[in-house]
Amino acid sequence: MTAHASLAGVTEMLDASASASADRVALVYGEERVTYADLADQVERLAGALAARGIGPGDPVAILLPNVPAFATAFLGVLRSGAVVVPLNPQFKEAELEFHFRECGVRAVITDADGIDSCRSVAARLSDPPELYDSLPEGEPAGPPPTPGPDDHAVFQYSSGSTGRPKRVPRTHGQLRAEADSYVAATGMSAEDTLFCTIPLFHTYGMGCCLLAAVRSGATLVLFEDPNPFVLQRGRALALLEREGVTLFPAVPFTFRLLAEAVEEADLSGLRLCFSAAAALPRSTFDAFHGRFGVPVRQLYGCTEAGAVTVNTDDDPYATAASAGRPIDGVELRVVDAAGEPLEHGRIGEILIRSAAMTAGYGDAEELNREAFRDGWFRSGDRGRVDEEGRLFITGRKKLLIDVRGDKVDPIEVEDVLAVHPKVEEVVVVGVDSGVPGEELVKAVVVPAGDCQERELIRYCRERLADYKVPSRVEFREEMPVGTGGKVLRKYLID
Image (cartoon, rainbow, N blue to C red; front, side):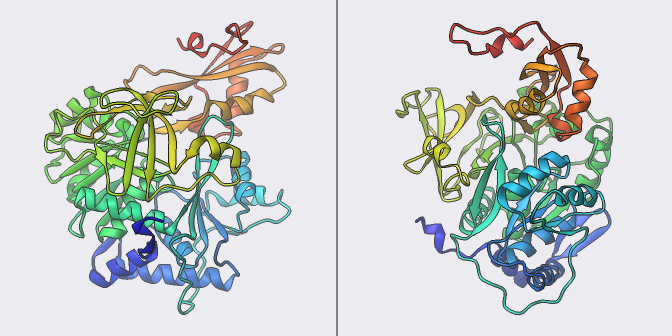
């Protein structure tokens, strides 16, 4: 057990911030402002309401909400009740929701008017349907809440991989607290900071580097209202960055590129740290954003299994722009060859992670865990190198994941959907160049079984998959290129 295991949990971070800065604004959303005292009170009331409805320690509670203040209240309130948060993408279609509800046995769902109908439809197909709430359940503080231990589960997130279905990633209160402590320390975040969040809070990046980091430090978290499509909202985003005096801005390369290309002007001189993650930051984007606003964008590396892993806080962000930085406190890295042997500095290999914030393994996946988690190290599937100063450089991925504007798409999951279409004999899904550095499009290559149209297959996917997973193109072929062992040669499908 690490030294972090004795630390208090996530909701104690809220208690500390509310006690130290009760009138400090915790959340900004449009014209709405929520203080830490208000947030703490809302969290207590939600925990009481859940307890009154029979939701308690260990019960999985799904949150299906966009980036609104209610997400923060729901997340912290579920943890306060002792239940487990299951943060899900509000873009998910019914088939995706049903998988997640069944996989972890969701007991309740907190959503909104946009999500309730899909949830009702899914719940009707389940033998033990969850309780559904289209707004935050109301209640009174229920007295002293249960106090989860550091080894009790706090969240069930889901990680894409190469197994066809997302894998459940349980993380404990102690692991989330360890990440928050280390990330806040690495960035020097304090109650004087203001964060701007365009990253989905259900995602590990948004959860750890925005919501939990803000609560841990007592900073103000600005949630960007109605962000999509971002290309049409970037002027408003720039105005908000300036108006709120934002000092920390974690985002994805796509966001930084669009802001650099915006016609609107803004004074962003108050920004002391910008971080890019979820995909490699092209040097062209770094140069464009810095040239436009005078602020360097630093890289950050993390994963669903471990949260934030490295952060570039180097004194010279220009010379080290290609680096994802050094490991934060409590994190160890190792770069290994194909046989699992450690490599010298500068040599490229697979990145292994050992961390106080890291999950102990995927839920109900004993065989997979034997491969992915060995001797306390997680095989990330990412490739990179570490220089003599300990800086990490990401050079690629072993996994097949496709990066769509910061969202990760598992091609096997898309293939599984298309493979059952009656007009598809064989299908392979690949990522192809979008024309923008660091961004890909999803392409499905199909051997048809009879007459089949591209729009028909795209519509079929759109009914079953979140929009970002839906192929932009469908290419028809008479047969797939295969090697001598019969394995499909994906490299010949990328053009």
